[in-house]
Length: 224
Image 1 (cartoon, rainbow, N blue to C red):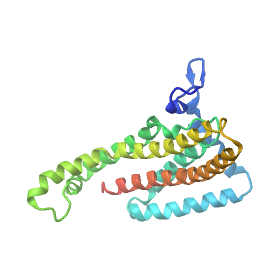
Image 2: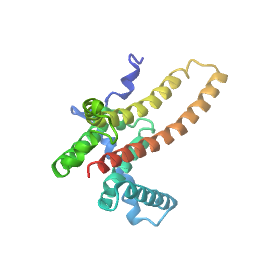
Image 3: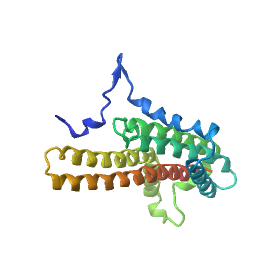
């Protein structure tokens, strides 16, 4: 019997005191080599179209000076997307629903952007602390507010990804636990509801990886 609802997200697979759950974050590598030695398929063409569309959008956000950085954000999008999708399969550890995973991605990226901006474009970074048209009386308060909003960016990125992935999994777990005790009519309704939720979770997996990559791109575009 499940004593804690969040225990479904706890690492539980161990081999010689080593946790094997985080190996699920590397399972996306199994999907990549096939693109190089198999004949072009619909999946390859679909993925190529997605990459081209993302490359165009990230270029428009970054500008011409740093357009080569789009590879970083496309890779980030792909990594999060594969981990989100793999978490929807049974008995696969959902690494993207943990702060250890999401904060490990957001904090180094944000810190590198801040160091690059303050070292190379200090005056530009100071100008971001006071929005244009701010009255002189409100300038000290705006500096404090902008500084706080800038500092909490990696946390908000990490929490947004983890919370959205946890929410859908919790709902699917709650509905799944009521199945064995339900009548046939209720069971049919539960199955239809879970199928609908699973399709919704697929959309959420794509949207959250896209939001994470786009917000990271926007944060990077502010440092130059």
